[in-house]
Length: 177
View 1: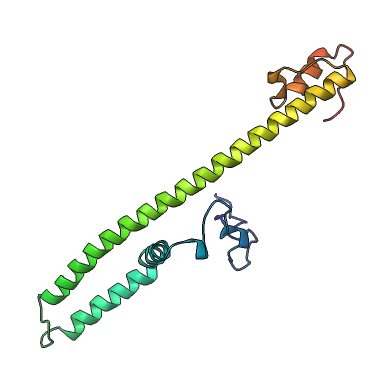
View 2 (view 1 turned 60 degrees about the vertical axis):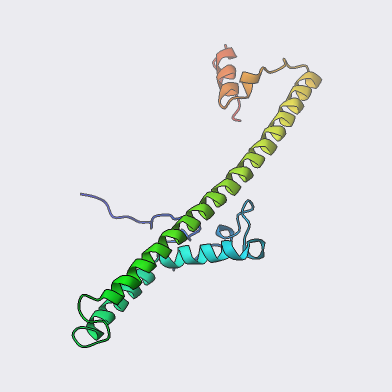
């Protein structure tokens, strides 16, 4: 028997508290690697708005209501009677425009991914420099206290605990790190 979920599934930028209304957390909107607000051009803001609007259930439901209203209003005696040739023309034009808008939105999504990748690369480069500085400081401390100089492999996770366990001949456990 499957056990019931105690927590709602996590979605990025959402609250984790069960039962609490879902709200966007402030950090979810302002990623340091992304431009936003006034930093975007008018075209980028428009592409984002159109992508978010056309990719929503509100748009789908509004389109269905519009189509149903057109068909009911023009059923037999309206200005566009049944085979709805004018409606067909309007929908064809809308589909053509949506294709172009989707391409613009896809290009915008690629640009966002590129900006995030550039930010991640810069953060990784900065982290690597900091890690190398910490390694140099550890080597300096080892030389200062007379300990053997650690090899590069000694900085891997768990290697210090393994070395201490191997070198311990008395059976006593090494202090917790």
